Length: 621
Image (tube, rainbow, N blue to C red; front, top):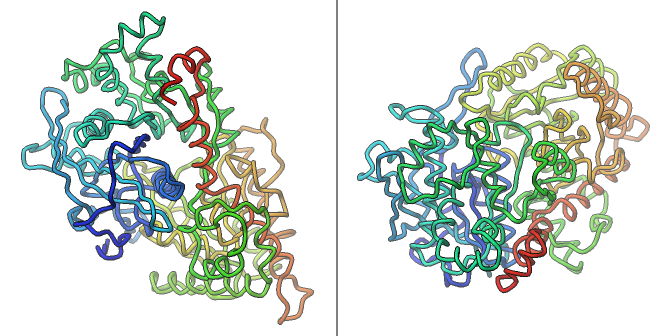
């Protein structure tokens, strides 16, 4: 990975943004975050980290007094390459945090098993689009000489443990001790003395509640006199966001491991954890102590309530940072035509539902073709055997390679796919995405896609771009003609890949946030009828694949190619859908709107706890 320090947000390490730590009220904890605009810093693996980065950027735009806490992964997630058989290979990312961050002069200790682990910190400032505000990011680092083997705790993201370090589960739990317990201790050491809300982004940071319980023991007697407990008090302080219905997003650890690693620190409260089947579930731990719990789309709220019926779960739909995810060509268009509109498109706070109606079709199409050319040139330059062209209908798909995301749905019947290309017009495919290093099933999905691309190469050109990151994602989401989003229903909490702001329409199953905003044939395309009762895996694959082929053949591609128009005419019907797509994503699917909702519902106003708790802790809000 080639990182260039002067490209990373123009950070001035000797003169960071001026803060008074005492003015900061919200602490946002996440296991990963893409904190620089181009996603060059290897501190994220995929959608969750990209969303976290967009969250922090929008908090800066809106002036929300936030500090973010994440681990500093000295080895990143991994660099992706492929062997001759098309199987994913991984290598460590080569970078040095000192080239990008300011070293802070505080250290704290956490106990991992029978060892003391020293945690140091770096600072990085995520600045608002206008440069007037910023959110400080505190990066936790154990890569210190005094830590010996334990220095590797913050070496690799998501339990890709280094050699010589116990089990994968032990490594992951150690990371969560550093993030949750170490993160709270670091904020205190740095002087963040006015934190009113702690936002846990998934359960990875849930161990913070153990430290918060410790820190507030002196309030127990006063709370008891009011008929309250420390748990009630923490519910007035804590927020929990759940991001996925998939089991991998809800960490569980055996009681024996918890007792051995966490309770090596005898100061931590032992009665705080409710074990389920002799396991610690970090999602449940975070929810137990949070007064506001939210899913990330309306449909995900109902799925989450089925999974966790004992909790009152709300929903705040995810969004993307408008300026970050708008290409250069469309930034120029939006600056030109949106200048007099209420709100600011760059921060996702436009107050007009159809801003793109002001832009002439010719200019939309020219901007899109510029970005399409950029994508095609990049793909052809990156992959020597690629032969993509500027005129073929280009379908993009990029996501983590996971079974439920069904990135190979297009290949369910390759004969049908090739027939569509022959009958309606040329098709070319651009894929990207990483599989978790321990997920051989995900790696086989990638291999299957690459094999299928080879099989259909006489009829349809296609590429699988390696080492997917934000830079590649921006090229793909702006340069594709159609974005594909095909999760198995009820498995995608929200999804944000289809929310990008250049107006590329999406063909999607009716899951996650897509079901809230996409209207079939108006601002995108819905694959198949919404049928919540059809949950058989094989049946659903057949239904959705055939619905997708029908959409491509009879609706989407005829609108794009429009055989009745002359060569000089524009595909006006398709451009109209592009405009509607951009309208939706610039307004309803922006992280500016999302963070405005967090600010109103969770950060500044009383949390959705009991009326009694709201009354008792009203002085905090």
